[in-house]
Image (cartoon, rainbow, N blue to C red; front, side, top):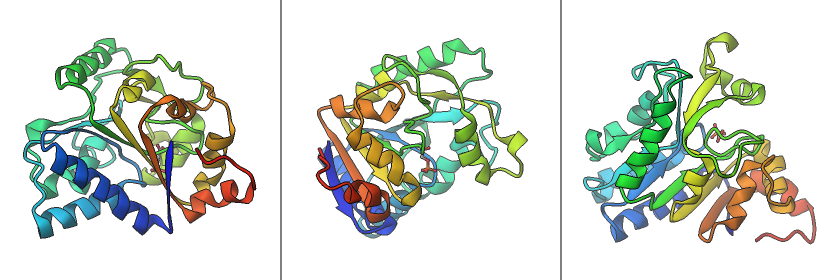
Length: 250
Ligand code: PGA
């Protein structure tokens, strides 16, 4: 894993956007794996700014998102469909029919995961996957204990993930209990992976990621076995890791 140290959220967002822009310049029809949550919002803002100022075109790009809640309609402001439109798609020139998010009708909709796997395969796989990390080490919504061989499917959210995401909902009961998420093996098949980590709340898990062995209790630890992972982390996120003198960064 290659680590790029940046000062703060703003710089992380700029560097991440630059990485995506370079990818699209090199391969205009890139398949981009996109993420939601608080972390990539600044990255998307920089992509929009660059689109407006420099006309970087996403006309040929294709996007596949990591995950989506189950039980929220696509036009629900808390859905990731809505988030992606608001935060990115409505502001750049990616055609709507080239943007994909997984969707499951119910928690029994096993077909949904298989279909998403087939879709990604038919697109030729993911060129660059953007990831955040949960405070518990999840990637996508693959919670601790998920098999590294998991493929896209229905997942149950842990209490800690529901609590971390409750800030977007009026009350805790409204936070969905399940989601559909790209699996860990699906994520690992991406040709490049960019992990964004910002803020002091992520310092313990980033430290653990570098210190711990590869284990299913820490889903992100599998990234150590991927040949092309770049972590862009800010000083707050790196604070514990940097205190641990002698840590191996990569
Ligand atoms: P966050 O979520 O960007 O809102 O911190 C990251 C994640 O849970 O993967």
